[in-house]
Amino acid sequence: QVQLVESGGGLVQAGGSLRLSCAASGRTGSIVRMGWFRQAPGKERERVAAIAWSGGLTAYADSVKGRFTIARDNANNMVYLQMNSLKPEDTAVYYCAARRNIVGSYDLWGQGTQVTVSS
Image 1 (cartoon, rainbow, N blue to C red):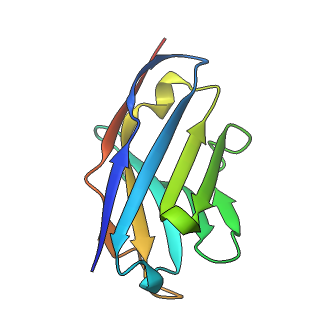
Image 2: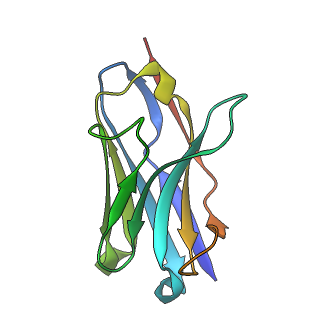
Image 3: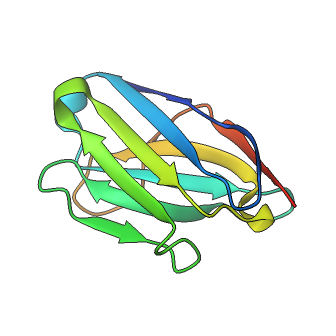
């Protein structure tokens, strides 16, 4: 199995930055793609960014393009989300997720970390 543990959330003022980290452990060789999702109260979960575990191809939600950057460190089984120019609407619980199939849904999830952006 694969375990995912997020860290790095917190409270930041609008315009500030945070970096989220996700540590993957276990059978990481089965991972095809990693993603960061977020869910704000009363809203549906949204995929924020994703990265191929090998090759590094990335994808971003329109709402974060140019502000967020996803990166991976395969040697240390880490995935990061650098968040710059944060806005109050970025406030949410952020989840790290892994997908073990080339197509289909993400099937492994971390416990989430709270990000709060004050205006």
